[in-house]
Length: 386
Image (cartoon, rainbow, N blue to C red; front, side, top):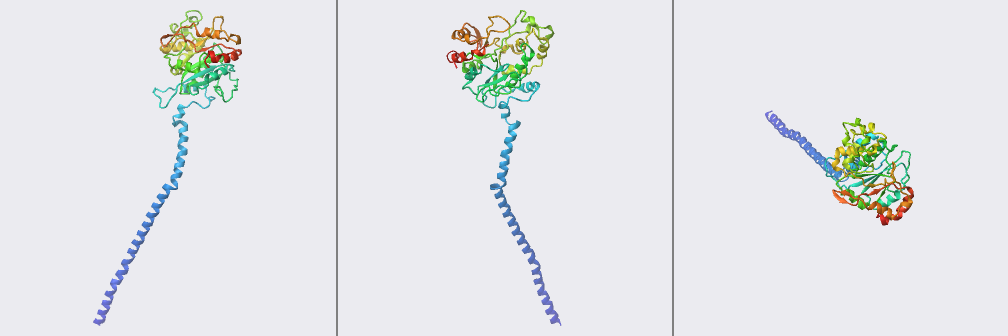
């Protein structure tokens, strides 16, 4: 019995190791399977990363990014938005909005790009530009050094070919009347539109009857090297000067500050901003300088004398002939265009240029009738230099 029980006991004790061995085997297999699973996951992860970087999502993201960023920069974040001139002059801004926008002025003098200063040629006209072929020849070969702006009657529709320097250079305009504030409004409108081009440094006001007296290079360097802006601002004690002053303009404008000058001016960018941003003197001139006070002869000369007399040459660079008398200067037609006529304009004048005596006093001349066009084109190469 004992033997049997002993045998049974030994058998049962012999089974325990077997049972114990079977209970330890499953965890080892699980660990092996789990390790294999982790290895596969890691391999899959590495393959996925490699694929994304070199074939898939990377390219897509790069493409999307390259498309979106320039779009944002084309709006307001790119410097080109401020550096480049408006592509279309026919904007929808009101005069109030335009003058406000044009009054922006950088406070840092050094520009963060290669700025080539330009001259803005601003034509104040009623309609056609009959002498435009003369100007086309004058501007030829000097792209990038000038801008052109035309203010005409709103009803006038200019028809210039795409090759013309006047093509699509009309600004949104309103009716202007000689001797009234609407004339100064038109001039401020021209200045404001020209100020939207940050590269315009000098601004010349011209009429449809004006011509240049020298080639472009001579005029550009004459204006560029000048320390002063060319605007007449003299004290006329007579009835057509101080006699037009209204005491109601004080205290903003006193009689001792009252000045007179031609409306055909050349000014730098600083003075142009002074004119478009003015809200101090404009109301006084609008209300108290009416015919027989001709505001276009007094507003700019008086205001700029008060604000920046040290920047004014106190003379005009546009020649006119008042020798025939009357309210308007002489007009010259076909029969007047001779070499002797231009000799009279070029010679016999003395002025000051950069505080030194000079015999070159006028760069432009008026008034020329449409009939003068052909003789001007014939004589221009020899006399005018273009």
